[in-house]
Amino acid sequence: MQYNFDEIIDRRGTDALKIDAVPNIWGRDNLLPLWVADMDFATPPFIIDELRRRLDHEILGYTMRTPRWFSSIVAWQQSRYGWEIKPEWLNFVPGIVPGIAFVISCFTEPGDTILIQPPVYHPYIHVPQNLGRTLKENTLDLVDGQYHIDFERFERDVRGCKLFLLCHPHNPGGRVWTESELLRIAEICHRQGVIVVSDEIHADLTLPPYHHVPFAKVSAEAAECSITLMSPSKAFNMAGLTSSYSIISNEELRARFHRHLDNSELNLGHAFAFNSVAAAYSHGTEWLDQMLSYVQGNIDYIGQFLSEELPQVGMIRPQASYLVFLDFRKLGLTHDALNELIVDRAHLALNDGAMFGKEGDGFMRLNAASPRSIIAEAMRRLKEAIG
Ligand SMILES: Cc1ncc(COP(=O)(O)O)c(C=O)c1O
Image (cartoon, rainbow, N blue to C red; front, top):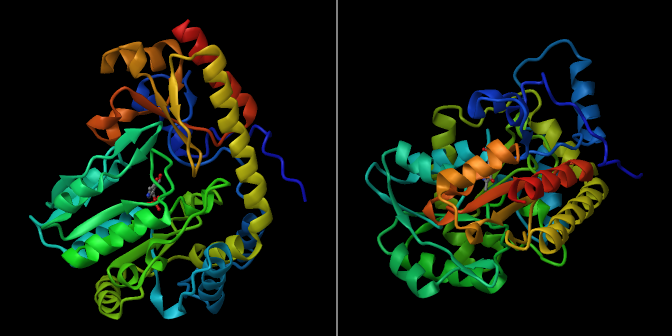
């Protein structure tokens, strides 16, 4: 079956954060919204059909984790990543960010130090801070258009930390960490007794020729010191269902985390939590491959447009996902002037790079998961604004 990603779907009035929150945040409604990380493509029909079938029954009572939920996740990890996991390693979490917060609450105390790698997905900064933890920054190096880890510095920075929040693949850089990088992280963190929280929400969006390797799969050390968080929410455009899961092979870490979830029933789920995941993973391969090839086309379009029409604007080419980190530093604008250019002159709602840490200043994150005509319009607006 051929899916149509060119279709423009009017999301206004659906309480979509990406669209309906724009007037509140930016104080105007004439902006093209290419910010929050969900997609303007239809959620796949096999997921919608599954939800519809459920709604055909008139009672929305408590819902349990079904054998199909377990088996579809196990099969997906096996077929997509060659990762053999056991059903008992899994638990439900109502979203990855809540999952990160639960891990922090479970394994650390106020005042403990947590390592992050800015520029990075902003809740990695706010959640630990909101929970009274201390942040340590292991800044990524931007070399030849991609982010890299300076391992000497990493080894120093991770010392004394309780947790390391690994964004894998990385947002906003779109970097797919290689097996050898993951092995070094595992070796260092294991030796130093640091728990690695591997947030792999963007994994299913890895763009060929890159390959995602689950962190916990790279070595026995990685498996022993890590907690993996995953979800089909990004890849299958179902973020509003807040249906994610943890994978923990280390028995001790698992028992402690599962007890933490059980104690407050944080892992209860809801009537659409388990069937949606099972539907995505049971029927999703063909749709996902087509969608990724469309997104790759959008990224290529942006790359070509910038190099031909706006060579003063750079771009970090994502190896995974649809988020494009645009580099405006050559324009030499202040933070406010860049925002004025993007909002007041280009009429675009993008994520200000500075929200991912000071290293993101001078960048803007553009969400390329929209029909090509919208992406073309965004580029046209940018060109007109910059001149
Ligand atoms: C790296 C990363 N982790 C987590 C999330 C959000 O996950 P959730 O909506 O399940 O909390 C995002 C969303 O953009 C993300 O980019």
